[in-house]
Length: 500
Ligand code: AMP
Image 1 (cartoon, rainbow, N blue to C red):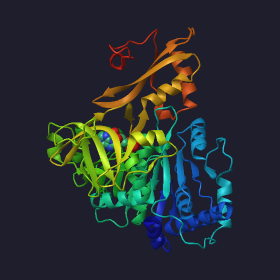
Image 2 (spheres, helix red, strand yellow; image 1 turned 120 degrees about the vertical axis):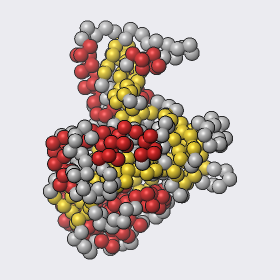
Image 3 (cartoon, rainbow, N blue to C red; image 1 turned 60 degrees about the horizontal axis):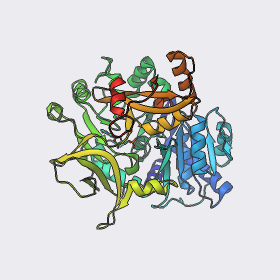
Image 4 (cartoon, rainbow, N blue to C red; image 1 turned 135 degrees about the vertical axis):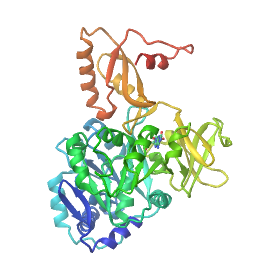
């Protein structure tokens, strides 16, 4: 696999691969640790190629575990600590990993698990013991990322070596800024696919990942101190992080004098933020990029300039990458001409082979084009194409983006129904400037609970937090006697949205 080959090129050097809280890992160490972990997996599991689940946040050893797993012919499943143990248990049940690397203090119902200390012993014991060729082939799954699913349980998107190669090929001309070394921002949790930009694009170019964790992101003073010392050349994040940063006047070229490129993706980039970024970073290039996890990170991009910001339309999500076919389709699947609105379909080598063990979902979401044999994906995004540029107009289902996190409203609703005394639940997004800023849950109780609204909200949120990542918990919980219904007799979500 190309990343492993590239890593090997730098393996003899002390070039810094990872930087985190003043500690660093060189390419030499990263490569040795990956090989040691691979040797351990081969010794312990032989030809069993079941996945390796890695539960943690931004620990410096995680990339070595990922690359070690793929060297030994396994795939990996990165699960961030924002996922509570109950949610991890659902992933374990679906994925049945041969091994769980648990870097947290939390208990997991995993059959075969090792903790941080055991991992350190393994890396020491198997250091220098890898003596095989890499076992990864094009069609092998490299990682499975679990994302919000409509049933109340997460679903696993499988990504192969071929998918990643297509992503790297497609993104290369857009990301190029003449850098071979340099510092790349690494703030996105490894369980979200935008982190693949750091892990696969940046590391394959010998760059240094400047790692910022959740705690630092939540503390403005610590965040700005980290940014000031980072010397970041290349920034990739959701617009939400930049929106948070621009609240401070410090966030400008003087803070990040080296930054040549800002890539925003994962959610709508507003014109307000784009203009602000152009003003504050006049020498940097600003890209708006788009892609679903199912089509491997990013599939379109555009350089944002003053002309796009002053256009009456929203900022486009970009031009399709050279190796992608993007089609706007009517509900019956026929291709629509330029200017017409319809679902965006993506076709190319970047499209995932499907969700793990979910034939039911795969049939609806993925397809193979009869004429070309290309793999395709139904994005569920309402879009139009004008002059080759794709414009995003909104979702066609109950999926929302909240601070860049993908949330299925039905996932939250299903989990609310598991909370004691809740008979019915409806969740709606709350918008500000056309962007989802929070969720409001409306619930009908099975029987009166005698609690104040505040006490009830606290109780429900506590129950939910055992099952859902914190970013999926509704900010407001509103109890109602009954839900409004529309003319079809369905819960009137529009009326509830108006109330929210
Ligand atoms: P995820 O799989 O978590 O990356 O989410 C993919 C979804 O995020 C897409 O299907 C879109 O709905 C949304 N999305 C991603 N990038 C953008 C963007 N640049 N502008 C608007 N929406 C985006």
